[in-house]
Structure formats: structure tokens, C-alpha cells
Amino acid sequence: MARATPFVGHGDDAPVSGENTVSGESTFGFEELFFSRTDPAGVIKYGNSVFRRVSAYDWEDLLNKPHKIVRHPEMPRAVFWLLWKTLKDGEPIGAYLKNQTKDGRSYWVFALVTPVKDGYLSVQMRPRSEYFDIVQSIYEDLAGRERREEMTPADSAALFLEKLHEFGFEDYPSFMAAALGKELMSRDRHLGNTADSVVYKFDELLKVTRSFLNEAQAITVAYKENEIVPTNFRILASQLGQAGAAIAVISDNYSILSKDMHKLVEGFIASAQSVVDTINTSYFLTGAARMQREVMDIFKNEEMGANETGREREMDLLRRQQADYIDKTRRSLGDISAQCTGFCRTCVELERLATGLEVMRVVGKVECSNYLDVKDRVDNLLQELETFQKTVTGALKALTRMNVLIQQEADHLRLQSEKAA
Image (cartoon, rainbow, N blue to C red; front, side):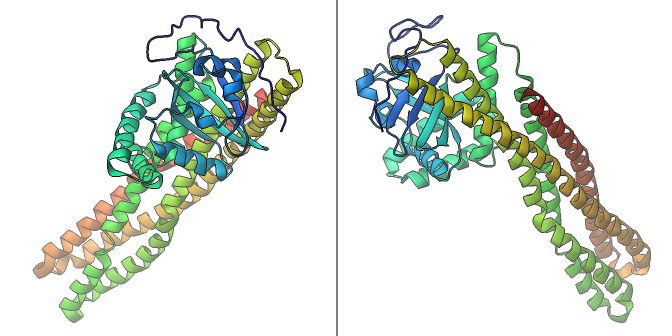
């Protein structure tokens, strides 16, 4: 591959408006975005003036060198293990990275790294959201443990995901989608931009999905806690002998309903999680497309470099990828609507079974009223059924409301994206 000549922006040595370089830190403005492209091995093939200036390297020190030339030694290896695993799977990733300049200073970025033909593109912005504060403390702890305990990157990555889970994130994709959105909102605030309605809408949608998943999990937990109820009814019926015929009928009926419910509950969380995962994917792709659009706008306002063809190639890569991500976002939002429709059908079926449980409980209470010698035991079992039925019914009502809201918002966001295309 021919050596690319980077284009020059507002001057490699020009100060950044509103920013100062302080001892130990290389700073840059919120209005600035880094851009770089590497080959499949992570070797730098192109970059913009912000990247060169903030890193304090000359172009001859950057081009055709591994991108890890700017990696800060305090970065936990877990992050790069996740980054490369994701990229080699052909998926984009967002990550907070602490970099180091040629003269030993540091600078933080939130990096969006995406696979392209013959390598990877990276667009990076200055982070300042509340998630940035969380990540700094996690990274410091992880890096320390990696050194002290001689942890493998894979083991460290597992620990990293555990720590993210403690902050309410199911997995890394859910974290990076939320973090990208928060950083874009932070960027808008610092630049005095009008709030991005799409980003804010997705952020609100994520809050709903967390409650959505919690309600779905409440149903599965309640079901597992009550799996033993039909067994207890059968034990009680056998102890009563012929006199326990009515209780035996209740046990049989409950077992039938329980088996039907088991089939639904098995895939219930997976179905709910699928809705949430698709929302996270749509959110991340939306943020990625916006970052790519903004870095292209920066390209347009920068002076031409010596190799105009090289610059146009980079812009074309970004244009193609942005268009692809916008298209993927629209399709992903359409998937949300379809998944919500399927999930709603599952909720209706679960509600039917829950109604059957309630009917059976009422009948059981009447039928068992004459078993005075085991009244307390019967009452306890029926009370467990009532508690379970109320938990399921309440959760299903909440899920139905949230499901409708998610579907409406997804359809609205899809229409917005189609108008903006």
C-alpha cells in the first residue's frame, strides 16, 4: 500500500481554542475529532492533524507504525483484548482509551473503531460524561490487578465485565452504546449545541428497557420460586388418601398449567433480552453514524494536504460506512418493532395462563375449605399461588405498557431516520 500523506487542518502547531496544554496532559477541544485508519494489523496508514498534534509525533513517526505507539502503559490489557476480539468478529466497538504522547504526556478519548475494507477506521472525541468517571476508576483497579496477579487479558476482561455489571450493564455492548450516547450529549452541552433529539430519545428508551428487563426477570424468578408448589400439593393429596381427591385434582391441573408456563418462561427472558439488545445496537449505530458525519464535516473545513487523492479516499470510506450504518440503524429499528410484536404475543399467552392459575386457586380454596386438619398447609400453598399469580399479572401489565411504548418510540425513530436520509 502506498504511503498516504495526511492532510493538514488548522495548523499542526496552532493552539486549540479555549484549551491549554498543561503539564502531564495533552488537551484538545470538544469541537475537535481525531481520525485515523490502520491496516488489518493495526498499522497506521492515515490520520488527521488533531491526531498528529495532540500525540506530539511527527508524521514520519506515526505513518506505517503500529497504532499502539500511542498506547498508555496504564491502560488495562482487558480493554484491548475486548477491542480486538470485537473487531476481528467484524463488529464495531466503542471504548474509553488513555493514550500517551511522544513526550510522555497523556490524553483520554472515547474511540469509535470500525472495520472497513483492508483495515479499521477510528474516530475519537474528548470524553467528559459521568461514565468517563466510572471507567477511570475501573481501569485503574484493573491495571493494578493485572500487574499484581499476572492476570491474562481474557481473565481481566471477564473481571471488567463483572464490574460493568455492578453498574447495571448486562454486557459490554450495552455499556458502549450508553457511553457513546452520554459522550455525544456531553459534547453537545460543552459546545453549546442544540440537544440531539434522537440521542436523547434513545437515552430515554434505554431507561425504559432496563425496567422492561427487570419486570421480565421478576416473572422468571417468581416462576422458579413456585416450581415446587404442584409437588407439595401432590404430597399433601397422597397423605390424605381418598379424602384428598380434590387436592389431587388441583395438583394435576396446576401441573398442566405449570408445564405450559415453563415452555414460555424458558424463552421469555431471551425474548426480552433480544428486544433490549436490538435497541442497544440501534443506539450505538446511530451514534456511530453521527460521529462519522461530524468528522467528515471537519474534513471539509481543513486545508488540503499534499495528497488530495489520499484524503478523498478516506472521506469516501467514511461516507460509505456512514450510509451503511444509517441503513443498518433503520433495519435495526424495524427489528425492534417486530420483536415487540412477538413479545406481546408471549405476554398475552402468559396472561392467559396466569388467569388460569387464579381460577384454579379460587376453586381450590372452595374445595379445600373442609380439610380442617390440614387447613394451614392448604392455605399456605394457596397463598403461594396467589402471590405468584399477582406477581406475574402485575409484571405483565407493566411489560405490556412498556412494550407498547418501546414499539411506538422505535417506529418514531425509524421514521425520523428515513426523513433524514
